[in-house]
Image (cartoon, rainbow, N blue to C red):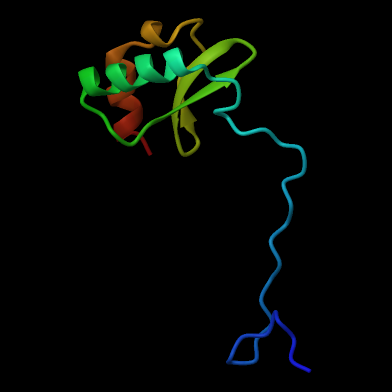
Length: 88
C-alpha cells in the first residue's frame, strides 16, 4: 500500500496544522462597509490592502502591517492607506 502523504520522490509531506476556532479578520464586515472600502481604496489608488474588523472597529492591513482601528471605514485616512501599501 502506498502512503498518500508520500510524494514521488519518497519524502513525506508535512501535514497542515489546524488553526482551530480562529476567526478570519473579515468576519462580521457588512456589505455596506465592503462597498465603502472598495470606494476608499479606489480613491486612494491602492490595491494590495485588505479590510479587517476587531472589537474596536475597522482597520486596513497588508501582511503583518496594519492601521489602528477606526469606528467607520470612511474614517481611515487615505494617506495611511498609501503608507501601509508601501510598508514592509
